Amino acid sequence: MTPNVYLFFKGDCFEAMTLYAHALGGTVESVFRNKDAARPEDRMPGGDNLVMNMIVRIGDMRMMGSDNSGDMYQAPQGFRVQIEAPSLDHFERLHDALGKGARRVEMPTGETFWADRFAMFTDRFGTPWMLNFTGSKAP
Image (tube, rainbow, N blue to C red; front, top):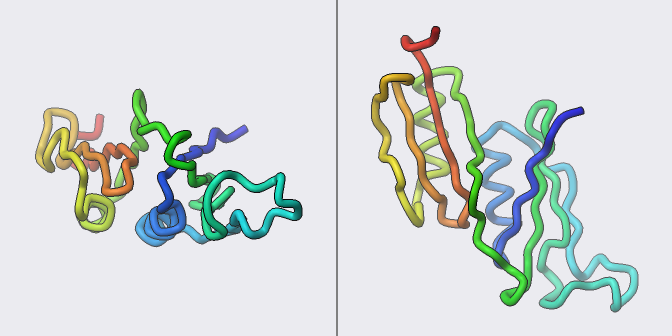
């Protein structure tokens, strides 16, 4: 059993999940949009291009996402998507891709007592991230 992440967006799911697939070396497995619903009553509130479900495969993990209508959307809280980068170069590439235009930087990129590089931010789509490269500080 492998836990998966399911993220909700306020109308920009396709853009966000496509970026995540690219940045994390994954692939888009499927996109099911509002217009794809077989019956009108199966649609969610909003336009044809809202994403009802999108799946990105990243290694053995599936990251899934969906748009929510404005009145149903709630900003994420109480969690972060955590990535352990295998190298400093990989950390920098991830940070550049995911952190560009960040809404908030909770902890700027820097060295900590547990990692050669660490950063904590909320990306421009509202997803909270925690990036880590342990490097020379591995136990």
